[in-house]
Length: 393
Image (cartoon, rainbow, N blue to C red):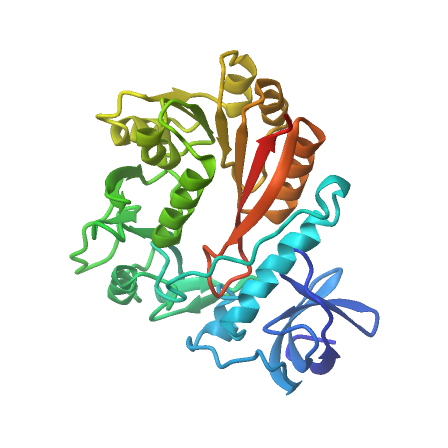
C-alpha cells in the first residue's frame, strides 16, 4: 500500500483526542475527514512506520451529520478537523471527549459534564494565526499535519477579517521567510505581525512588540510572546461564568495561578478583596502590571506557580488554575490542597491532563461539582473546559 492508493473502511468511535483510528489489513489507520459509523473510501497520504495516514475521499455510507464544508481547503490543510460535521454533533463530540478522558480516573469517572457551551461565531472567530511560507515561490499557508507539505491558502475562514487581509497582501510576496504570525485585537482593531515582514513593495506595519485588546470593557496590553485566548468572545463568556460561580462578595482573597497577562485577575478584581496573580513569563507579568493599573488590590508575582504556591502561607478563599496543555505541576495540586480554599476553578485545554489534575484534587480535600466544556475552537477537535470544585467541609 503506497501513497495515493485507496481502500474502504468502516469507522468506529473517536478517541479522547477526537481522532478516528481504524484497522486495515493489519495496519493501524489514522483517518482525517470521517465521522464515526460511516463507511468511507480513503486515500493514503503517508505511510508511517507504525500506521497509515489517510483522508476520506468519498462517504459510501454517510452519516446524517455530514455536511459540505464551507472552506475549499478543508480537506487539504487539516487545520479544521471537523468542518464536514454538523455543528450540534461537533458539540456532542467534544462533550464525549471529556467523559471519555474522565473514565480513566476512578475518582472522577462519574463527574457531571454539562452540554458544551456553543460559540456565537462558528467561523471568523480566531484572533491569532501562524502562517508558513514556501521556499520556492513564497506561498503563504499551512502545513498539512499528515504529509507535512505546505498548503497555500488565499483565505482562512476561521480567521478574523483583518488577518485575511494580511494573508491576501503577503501571498507570494514574502519569499525568504519561513513563518510569521498575525494577531488582531477583536475589540480594538489593533494588529501585531511578527517578525518584521520581508518583501518588496510591502507597505504593512510589522515587527512590533505589543497588541491592545479589549475584554468586558477593560483594555489589555499583550506582548507578542505572551499567551492570550484566540477566541475573544468566548473568553469573555468564560470569565463571566467563573465570576458568577465564584460567588465573590468583594472581601475574598483570590489566587490566579498561571495568570498570563492577568485576564482573570484584572476582570475579577472589582469583585474581590485581594487578587494575587502568579505567572512565570516576564513579558506576561509586565503586561499584567500594565493591565492592572488603577486596581490597587491586584498583585502580579513573577515566578513558577509550584514554587510561589508552595511558599504561600496566608488565608485564601478561591484559586483559579489555568495551566498550559501539560496541566498543573504536582506541587501546585499539593499546595492548593494545603491552602484549602473554599472554591477552586480549573481551566483546561487538554482533556487528558484535566482528568489527571481533577482526580488529584478530588483525592485531596475537594469535591468536583461539575465541568463546563466551552467551544473555544469551532470546526476543530480542540476543547476548553472549566471545572468547578468546592472544599469538602
